[in-house]
Length: 168
Image (cartoon, rainbow, N blue to C red; front, top):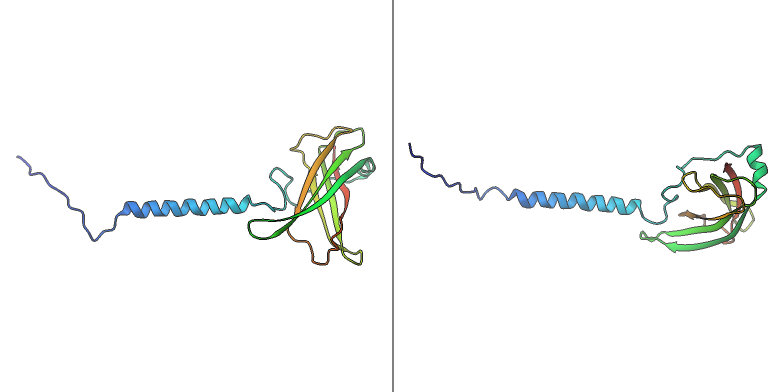
């Protein structure tokens, strides 16, 4: 009726599972951190909160007529190196609403030329998206566009920047 107490002795041939589980969890966390760091590295083509790639704003007759009232001022270029030792070229400027309507979205086309004044690179990018506050008449808004790859034939001059899409 009385049972004898039993003592369980661990088998020395089996490894400690606690250490293995901890190492597996640590490796998974490291992979997640690396993937997150690569996602948020500077030099991505578009900043968070911008329009999805391939999104273009309308540029019909009304938008084309209104674009004549818009100005792009204070254009500047800078170059920097990111963590992957890639050279990133950043174009900054200000979009000035010289018209009488508030703007919810704007897209610009940027053209880099070569030594023969031929277009070496042409890209259209949103610089004002509907998630940002509207630009009221007479107001100015700064913008920034980054490029990871510009052709070696670029003449190192400021690119031509023109408005190629608007949303009221």
